[in-house]
Image (cartoon, rainbow, N blue to C red):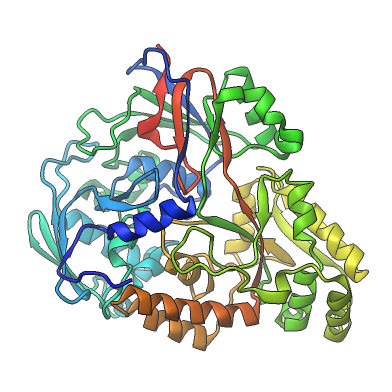
Length: 540
């Protein structure tokens, strides 16, 4: 699909139609009756954020849910189909898909009352990209000219500059972005949380901001009790079309998904975007929740990564053997009770450019071939799969280990961290001693987002520490290709190389089943498996 390079409104309607045709986007649950209370309180299931609530430092679900509601970007995504639209951007124009002129809508405020201007975007993006600031999502700015000068490839090298040459403030509400080359995904990418603006107060005192973040989104921060509650409330001066219809928002922090579900059924929690395994067995959740079930077609994927800094996993035959030893079909039907389907590709269905079975035979259960490859690998010892044991992650991974054990005749053990934050500390510190869960939910609807963060050298979520110069070169070429059809072909070539290397093994894709309490008249869930805040209506 070719794309106009004269004027941009986030993304062409063709992609929206593609996602709708494939079933991507948000699902809803509504009673269809009752009066709403605009000053009501909504409580949402949460997990403890593992990092500071800076928009470029929160790349996991627990914190991402919070920062997504605290901050608004130039571009938003429609809940029903993931289609991008101009949110804070008045216009985004380019004649060559390399140099973009961005005009920011006037009248928007930060939660401290200061105006959101062009400089707030430029300063925030420069700060996020600057290597010494060690932001988790810094690599997303690599498409901008001058990134390599503020973030050198060598982690030990001192950056030559602290500002990217590709960013220029033109006026109070206008700035120019120059990329390394033409790209087909830039106007979609900038709707992702790391591209949020930051107020001047952030740069004056980042520690104070860490304790009380100030955003520009539909809700503002009130207070935080670690491992218990993050309290927010409606920002009445918000100018976006995604205004909320309630007063108070409580993110209740749980270490157990089972406990959260019990609270949901009892009416002590208003929204959960994912249900525990016990609720899915025999579709128990339907009896528990009735018409309060919330469904959505998600753009995401579950996988198990092979950390390349562990010598044993450098052997591709071992990686292939383990992947072929997992009975995805059986696990998704039994342990996951049909709420997931087997995954056989590195890109999610519903994404333009998705192809089924790119993993080929190595994602198909074949215990005989798996045993042969395992013996040829020469591996001895015990295999382990590491993950957090909360959030319903333990049971399917234990089943995967049992499948590996039965097929290969090798000991396999699930090693669970107490919670997601503890698990991510192990992953981020490159302290894994075995395979690890590596789930992914799309930040924005693009094939690029399933490959660059996960498989490019130094990618923000490259948990396997995978590096292949050929893959990097193809991804770079795809990033800098203006024509979307041509770019997708290059991304697909990169995916084919990744499939041969198998740095991680796709396992299953979630169907997207959540629930609301009877306290809510209506609730929707997005393609990112997050509550659509503007859809939530509290019963009067």
